[in-house]
Image (cartoon, rainbow, N blue to C red; front, side, top):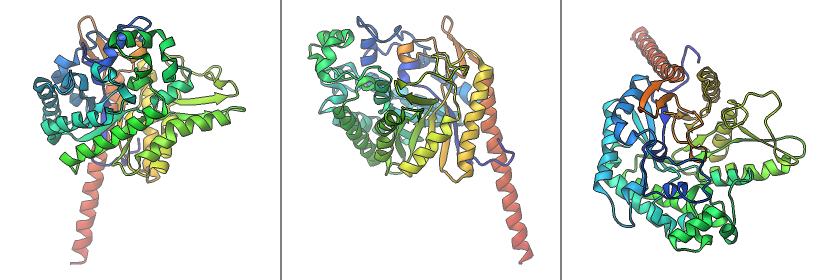
Length: 435
C-alpha cells in the first residue's frame, strides 16, 4: 500500500460471516434440513458452528480491536420467520442487538438479508422457483427494516444468486426439475416434505431459467422494500464472480459461462447503489471443460489454484458492465498456512489499489472470512478465517493475517487523514496569500 493512501476516508475495511456458517443450530433452515438427509451433498452437519449466536458481542469487539472498520454479517430468515407468517420478535431483537454492538464498537454493519439459507417451509412451496418467493422475501425484508433498518450501514439483498450456474459449469448440481427425482438427496427431501421432487429448489443449487427470474424478482422487490423504509440506504446484491479465462479449445465454453455467471447478473445490477464482488481466483476452461490448475501452481485446501490477481479483473469487469460502485464483499484463501494468506491478502489489496488509481469507484474490501467456520458442502475442513476457532472450547485466536489487514485499515485511514489535513493547511495558506 502506498504511503499516500488512495483509499477513501470512509472505505469499508472489514471481515465477513454468514449466519448459518457461524451461529450454530439453525434448525428451521432448509440447509440444516438438507445436511441431515440421506445422500446429502454436505460432508458433515453444521451443528453448533462457532456459536457466534451467543458470542457475537465479544466477536464484534475483537473485530474492532483488530483495527477493522466494518463487519458484514447476515440476518437469518429461518430464525426470524420460522413458520410462514410467524415473525419472531425475540430473533428480531437479537439482530438489533448485534447492530447496536457494531455501532458501539465503531463498525459499519453491512447486512446481508439472504446468505444461501431459507426457512424450511419455503422449500415446501417451491423454494427459489416458487411463484410466491419474491413477494415473501420482500415481506421478510420489510419486517427486518421496520425493526432495525435505522442501524444498518449497507444492505445486501441476496448473496451469490449466480453461484448455481458456476457450480453447474463444474458439474455440481444443476439438475433440471424433471430429473431431480433420480438424485437421492432431492428424492429424500421431496419424500419428507410431501412434495414432488421437481419442486425442490434450494437457493444454492437451482440454476434453471425460472430460478434466475425468481431471484431477480426477489432482489428487485427486496430493494424496493428496503428503499421504502430508508431511501438513503445503499442497497445491492453480491455476486460470485470468478475471473473466467480459457486455453486453446476452451474459448466457447468460457464465453458461455462468463455470460451466464458474470455478465447478465452485472447487467441486472445497473441502477443499484453498488454491486458486491466475491472473487477467490480464476476459472479456466479448455477443450474438455474445466481445466486443472497449472502444473506446479500453489493450490488452496480444495485443490484450486491460488490466483489473487483475479480480483482486479472482476472489479474492472463489474465497473465496466454494471457502471456502479463496487464493494469487495468477499475475498480470501482456504489455507492452514497463514503466511500464505497474508501474501494473498497483500496481492488482493494491491489489486483494489490499482483499480482506485484508475478512477474505479471501489467502496470497500471485506475479507472472507472473520472466523474459521462451516464451509457448506466442505464442512469444517477449509480454513478461510482470519480468526481461528478452537471448536472444543470456542476460543478465538486471531491470526497474523487479521492483524496485517487490520493495520492496513488503520494505516490507510491515518494516511488519508494526514493528506486531508495537509490539503486544508495548503488551502488556508493560499487564502492567506490572497488576503
